Image (cartoon, rainbow, N blue to C red; front, side):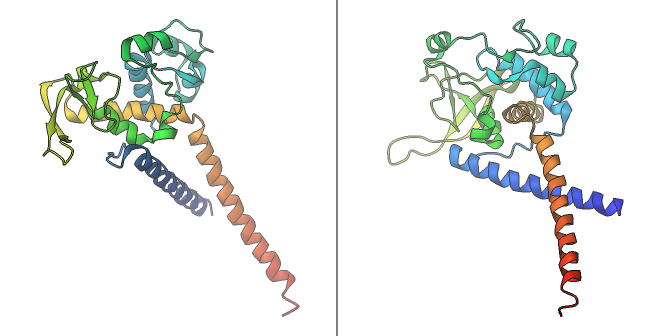
Length: 253
């Protein structure tokens, strides 16, 4: 009986994850034009989330806040002690109970990039994990842009590539001119290698994406586990109700 319950729970969990994946893919297609790569994130992989948190704090938090997330919550959910959070993730000298707020003000952002960097607390819920993963891999050098960078997925992005040292300098490969005279970017080539190879960089971007997915809904894993038990309860209650109905109508028929 215990083994059967375990198998049923595992099946229900897979179905829930599959349904969530379909929903996120639909959101990503709607928001990003459909040309996205599969992120392959796993919110149950705490090592990936811990790496992603460290990468985000070092490469993203200088401009982007996570105003709905506290340092203490990150430590609690990711299995980190208060000392580990304060030493490795809290780069602003904030208190453990403070929200993750960037030191860059809106005025500083406008002066540097032409617009204030957005808060990324719920970016994964708005755009989808696949969109974030693809976006972070799609920067290329473009001298026509004010910051010297552009993005294939999100054209004319105001920010430079924060991960260029690891990825390397990515150059665009243009296709044929369209009827409007534009030359679409069809691919990339690395003109100057970074500190990571392609496989390592994919994992780096996946870790950051996983952390942003977690930041969008810190209770996602707990919610999914509760959902599995709720489905099992409803299935069991339905079975009991069927037995009761059968017993109740036995003498009638």
